[in-house]
Each structure stands twice: as structure tokens, then as C-alpha cells.
Image (cartoon, rainbow, N blue to C red; front, side, top):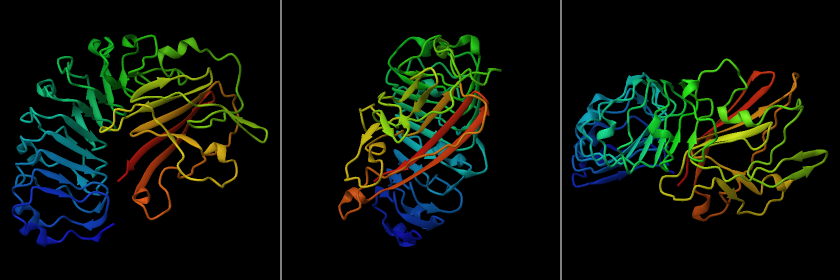
Length: 371
């Protein structure tokens, strides 16, 4: 919970190899003296309130890990990033400021984790990505990327690929349809509808991934769930069992979800889930309460669904009319005590969008910084 600026005196620690400032309240610009730390192999600046642009990076050529998640720093991504040929882990997200083309990472053949999420990147995905033979996790979501996806079928170690929230178009690559075990999210793009697979997959999310004139056409696999009657309400116990509160019945929502899952639970509602926690092999995105709950209707807060990247609840078959949307929140993970369990910050954005009289979308983008 440090506040204030980063002290310039840190630049005198010439033998320093790791500098981790994550999850503080640090502000201001990074001091130029940090450029003297030429032996750094790991630099993490995430979850702070810094100002100014990402500094030039040419002094840190020994870095193998660079992490700048939700730091407050602005783009564009500096061209000097291309000099960090030893990088194995690059994580940058939530940049405001100017847009930029995809940075030149062609020399980083040892890259294992590449995250450039919500960085205002324009243009196309570069063709050199297939040469990153050690790549395991690729996240280019929520940018302005266009064109197609390079053939990454030769990347045998690739486990997760998220490109949701771009403007990618053309055909869905055939190598993504072979059931290779990768988790791939193509949601919210502009691919050709004719190249979609007809059924829902456990590891390929095609929710809103193609151009369609029908606003209720969420995915081709939804064709198995036609609207049989108009719905006037939807109540969901997010992540929990069915619960009756007064005259309302909150439907059960216990599907374990996953890193790239589009799941129509009922004919009139379902959800799309994206993201995974990199250091965990657990893909069940449901969390249980760890505290004693004393609030009214506690059964709505006992269990919850979470998402490391984004989750969308959608409703279909809704009759035309006026609706009231109520979201219930409670902190059920961090405990209000003096143990380390209480050390953490949670931030997320909620979007509620009405697109037509038969389709209501509740879209949560989670940006969680947990220590």
C-alpha cells in the first residue's frame, strides 16, 4: 500500500535484477534514474496510479519478464520494446492514450506468455507469431485488430488464445476446429458466418464472432434452442443453486464454464465466459463464500461466478417492453480482518446493453488485481 512517487534513489542499486512494485498506490512518472538498472531481468509495475507514457525500454535489454497491467501508464507502446530479445513473458494491458501498430516482437523467439490486452493496437496480427515456438498463452483481446489470424497450428505448446473484442474478419481458421485441446476465444469479431461450426464447443468460443443481420443470432449452435414463447423476466443466481426470494425464482447457474466457453443454459438465457488464471490449472470459474453472511437473502451471495477476463450474460425471447435490471454484489472472498486474506483490490466494469426487443445483454469485463 505504498503511495507517492517511485524514489529516484532506486536507480543506484546497480546490481538489482528484480523490481516488483505491483499492487500499490504509487503515482507520478517513473524516474529516469531507473534506466541505470541495466541488470534487471524482471520488472513488474501493475496495479498502480502512474502517469505519463510507458518509458523507453532500451536500457533493460536483459529483461525476460515485463509486466504492466493496469498501471495508469499511457500508450503508445514504445518502439524500443523490439530491443528486448530476451523476453519470455510480456504482459501489458489497459493503456489509455494514443494507439499504435502491433509492436515488433520478431526477435523474441523464446516468448512463452504474450499479453497485449486493451492497448489500442491497430492493424493486423503479425505473421511472425508462428516462429514463437515456446508460446503457451496469447491474449490480444479488446484492441482494434483487423484481418485474419496467422496459422499457429505448429505451436504445439499453445494452450490459450484470446482475441475477443477486435474486428478480425475473413474465415475462421480451419486449424482451430480440429479439437486440439487449446482454449480459443474469437467472440466479438467479424468473421464470415459461413465458416462457423454448427455446434457449441467446450474450448472454442464463437459468441458474437461473425457478422449477422439478426441481433438475436448469437452463435450458430443456438439454432438448437428456438424461442417458443416470449419471456417477461429473467432471474439468475450467478454461480449458485436455484433460490426462491419472495415471488421470484432465481434460476440455478452451476455450469463450471471455462477459459473459452459459450454456453446456452436455457432456451432464453446463457453466458459467454473468457479467460483463465495463468498460474492455475483449475478451469472451474466458481468461487465459494469464506465468510459468515448476515445480509438479507444470503443464498444469493453464497456462491458466485468469476471471470479473469470477461463474462457475458445474455437473455433471449424477451417480450417488448420496459425492464428493470438489478445487479447484486457482495465481497465473499476477501475477509475484513488483519490477515493477508484482506489484502487485495477488485475492479471491474459493467456494461448493460439493449440491442433489440428480443435480446438483452449484460456484459461484465473483469479487471481483477489480486495480491
